[in-house]
Length: 406
Ligand SMILES: Cc1ncc(COP(=O)(O)O)c(C=O)c1O
Image 1 (cartoon, rainbow, N blue to C red):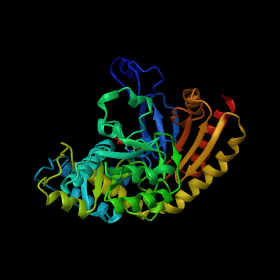
Image 2: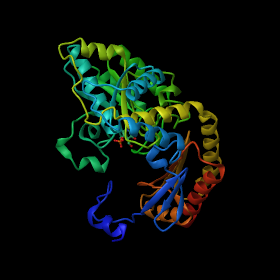
Image 3: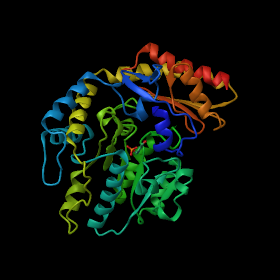
């Protein structure tokens, strides 16, 4: 039986019907920035697998790390046990984030759940019974229920779940100061994606607002959660999105590129103040424990990926990628269908006036040998930092060709 026939019968794809109403491509293998389809077609990857594969696919150092660890110990429970790959990873994350208390989890959404729980427990430990958060319009923080409660409520995929979702407070970033002041006694904290809002609209905002959130969170003892799952590890041109404002949040969530997409892994990093306050209170513990927490294969690959990242010339590479997006995408403003062009770090975005072209554009790009996955009215590319000049041109030329031809 053909893979696509099996897929049609048994496989439910993300944000999709079963069988899928849209075309599914079958992938045979990957290497560097290339996706090879079953029929031998090669596509340059303009998505880096949803912001994760920062070093491209099948990087030999990452494959080596996972092979080596698989011979020693692929998995061990983390309750009551520890191991070298996890300890090493927590130490390096503590250094990189300047947040020394690290909780490992298994996906971005789970680390956000843990962050929300930690903030609530911290406030409880201080005698404050508050469990609501301020979040932003257009926010996206994951698909599990707690996460959906801090995603933009107008986002259609979340309105479907109605009363089941936790109710929180939403505002535009420009109103963040007034909103915090208004709700300061009723909330546990504030959660934002620093500088770039990703899946909720690919919107870029002024880092000065992060400084405002930092100042007010300190003043009113609110927990400032920076969700760096998408923005982390250089995606915005700085190590963390928060670095654009030179601030440190109280909690940071990290995922996606943590393992360069090789294994699923995430982390919640926080301050000693927060971990000590919870640990020394009558609550005493952080009530969360995923089965695959601290998976040794994932931690080993994360350690190797971070080492590669730190040894690379990522800052200059990101500058080059950003310049390319600017030069090649700006001229698209002349088309009536184009509403806006945005770019920061390794991210280039073309916002259209209509959301009816996403699949047509995807098809046109595939015809030109490029993998992109537009959503709604957004055509965007997030590339691996190992991308070549030729591949970058291929991606932006495919976008240009698609915009011209729809
Ligand atoms: C900012 C942000 N937070 C959380 C998530 C959820 O991560 P995961 O898909 O690994 O659960 C995402 C995923 O796109 C994200 O962009």
